[in-house]
Image (cartoon, rainbow over all chains, first blue to last red; front, side):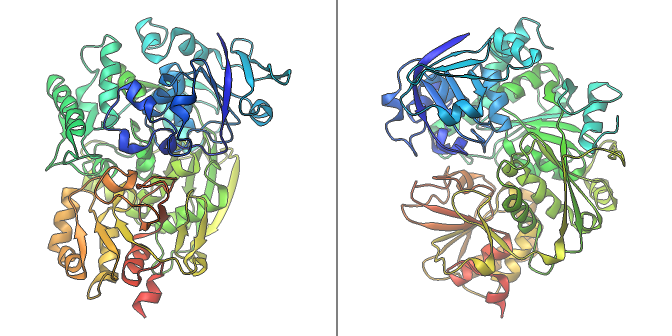
Length: 164
Length: 421
């Protein structure tokens, strides 16, 4: 799977309350959630994102609540990949389960700048900052998790009998 | 291979003799639960999966607690979705207004999760039941859907950090101060992906409500679960609450831990987490002059009867400071009733507090106590992220019920001793 786009960059401990504030959790409609994604720390987020863009975060990305509305909001806003130094555990499994591509790569998350154009090949784990010409290598997922991602998430994996 | 307590519970539920950290397993579940926010998404995914019936209706619990009594039409629709599903699937443990409580207080109270269980919940504070010696962890809605359909969940077996507690908590210091102290020490990702296992004579000296509070906030250190060694306190609690057999698991004496911390409980002081992360802790003595607009005492972290008692003992016979709104939320109907019988509701109302029906409302900025721009709240809840309780420019200070009650009286962050002197 390949992703390419311009980056938006945030710091450490981006929590689920800023990804999608709880005042909007009276709906689970992906488009409506996307329209409020990140608004408490980045008011223009939903208008500035183009399909395929890549989000870069620091340590402990997605900490806080278990709300799946958080990865759903990010995915539905058009983000094709989240690169972070590390992910909070519930966000990590939620992203895998709903089919939002994520990759843990501290070097890439450190070096890539806001607005750079980035390409990533998730199968090989290679991330390339096209703007600076730098290349990074992330650890690939274990096979068990790769199978869930390849199926398109946990629901599809269950339907296909890959996991049960 | 020696195992930690969490690893032993997971191995037994995966049908394996042993497991080791990092191993991916498929595990049988004793309890799967969700609330009015997370369940509608799970129900949608359950249907997408092509599932028709939940694998075991006895093990599935839905609790309407976040936005109830319904705060608006959309919230009402979400509860209706849960209600319809519970009816269609004949779920015996569906908790609606009048019978509900805040999920993590209600589930142990009702004996829905017991010692030795593996439980998942589509709510991050599901880690609370580790206090009972169960492995419990928060997951997302898709995991909940998969759990409902198959009775199972996938886990990466965690390694663990051991906390050896010694001494006893001083007066006016509680489990909340202990867990805030720990998060301040190891940080909001200090236990990321790992178990926090609590042991030692100090752990055994803690009451069950204190243990529930400590495990509740394990997620605030990034942990997969928090868990207390089973002892007489656990067994006494379960004699009262468990309606089925419990299973006691013990860590192997030679189990390997990533880190070991020793904490002397007698040295702890009332602790406050400053905005905007639970790791920004200071003792109340270092808090300085922080004037406040609101106090919230309640939530899945601190809405138990013991919490209400500790607040009432400070508030009784005093008045809430002018310009402070004090909102008290007993976590379940049973706790509410016990507070009434003990006279606490009268104490609170006479002091100028408002007492609410159980709800998660203000904790996550849903309703029932939203903050305006620039306002500050001392709260017994669990998160103080940007915008958590309302306006982006508002501030939440996390503290124990005793400290929150003292602050309500003082109109600023204050220690119980300061108000009681």
